[in-house]
Amino acid sequence: MHYPVASEAQLAFFREHGYLVVRDAIPQAALDEIEAHCDTLIAEKDLLANDWAWGAKEERDRRSFRIVQSSPSYVWAADIATQPYRQWLATFASRLMQREMAF
Image 1 (cartoon, rainbow, N blue to C red):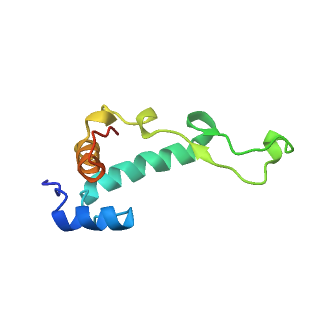
Image 2 (spheres, one colour):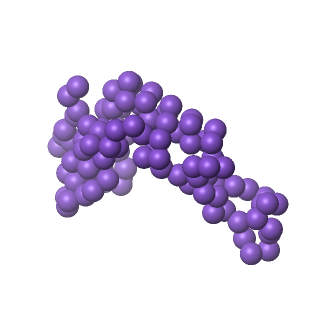
Image 3 (cartoon, rainbow, N blue to C red):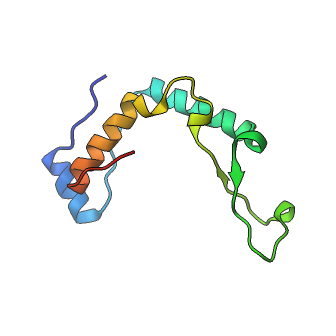
C-alpha cells in the first residue's frame, strides 16, 4: 500500500484552516483490524480499560457519564508501533506541523 504524501495544496489548506481530511489514506484492512481490537477493548472494558470520567460529587459506580480509556496495544498480537499506518501518520503529521512528530 502506498500512503499519501501531503501535497502543497493540503499543506496550504491546513495552514489556513488548522485541519485536514485525508480520505482513503489508510487501507480498509488496517481499519478493520483496528476496529476489531477496539471492539475487544470495549467488550472487555472491565479488564482492559479505565474509566476516569467522574467528579468528586459522584460515587464512582453511580457516575452520570463514562469515558473508556484503553489502548489497542493491550490486545494487539504484534507490536502496534511498527504498523505501517502509524509510521505514515507520524510522517504525514510532521510535514503538516513542520516539525518532527511521534505517534
